[in-house]
Amino acid sequence: MIFDAGIILVLSFLGLLIIGVPIGICIAVSSAVTILMALPAEIAIFTTAQKMVSSLDSFTLLAVPFFILSGVLMNNGGIALRLVNFAKLFSGRIPGSLAHTNIVGNMMFGAISGSAIAASTSIGGVMVPMSEKEGYSRPFAASANIASAPTGMLIPPTTAFILYALASGGTSISALFAGGLIAGCLWGAGCMLVAYITARSRGYATRVNLRNASVRRIILDALPSLFLIVIIIGGIVLGIFTAVEASAISVIYTMFLTLIVYRTIDVRSFITSLIKATETTGVIMFLLAASAAMSFAMSITGLPSALSMAILGLSDNPAMVLLIITLMLLIIGCFMDIGPAILIFTPILLPITSAIGVDPIHFGIIMVFNLCIGTITPPVGTGLFVGAGIAKEQVENLLLPLMPFYLVILVTLLLITYVPQITLFLPRIMGL
Image 1 (cartoon, rainbow, N blue to C red):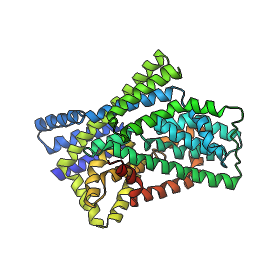
Image 2: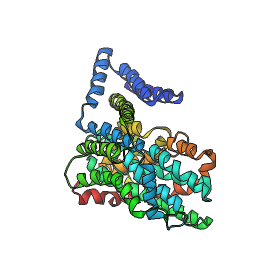
Image 3: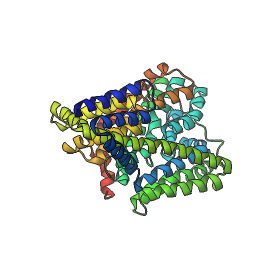
Image 4: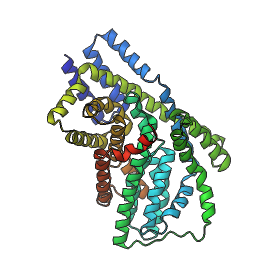
């Protein structure tokens, strides 16, 4: 009976997903059906409701709505152009400078907004048309924008690591942020390497012109926005406040910046931002509650232990087990958004990696990095389709230009997977 319930869980979830039912509903319905099959109805209903409600009773979860609101305010506050001009200061003398500006801009704006799509839209919306006007190939400019957009989901502050911390049972958010900073910067550096080589081979010269702009003015315009990252990382590193407290401080600082310093948001826009942040938070909270129900359903069907035995049965070599899990996550990321994937698969895969001696912080970075790749990978990658839409280019025309970026990103993934010191040295020297 339990085995049959496990089959029902998998088939009902995949069936609903295939016919286009929203992911949160897929998780909730398949979990409810499975639990009702495995347990008496009165026990199933009470226990499921208890699991869903208790999953939201967490102080750590307060960071989610705060970081979301901060990102929405930054996204609506006209920050993108200031960061683009600031990025030119670093990349203006490098071959393919406009592509490098796009990549650096995505890293900075993505970190501030916490959204790959927001970065791709805001920075790419400025840089892709500018690059095409200056003689760059549109597919190349769009590819540089798409490939670098997910860096902001690794560079803190980001909700992906908060969700992993919750799903893993309390992994340090501060340590995940520190490791994610390294991983995100390596991703961005890899994209810049591809852009440099491509620009040299195609003769894309340095075309960024700063003669008509005051360098000092550009820096002064961008620094208040960039200082948010300093506040978050610096405050956590120095032990001034926790990650949850940092999220609240980020909202206060962002409100001060957009309402008073830049004056790019009025009262009406602020209310609109509150509504949007509330809607996004509601979706995430529902996913979290539904995922708690699915975790309970999986526990009573024995799926996690069965999958663990299956993977460890293939090999007891830690390197091979990590490779199998990495391939699984890459495939999962191609079909599922990063939030639900973290919430569903962390309780399944973390015990396996712990059994072979992988640090939970290291695995969290590996998992988020893998799933970030899925955001720019067909067939469901939202970052890919949004980036193509911004560039007004067909997705199929972008796959070949994206291949060098994919290759470098995958090499970076293997590096951080098999050389844990790369991403763990910063959390360790911070005492995390």
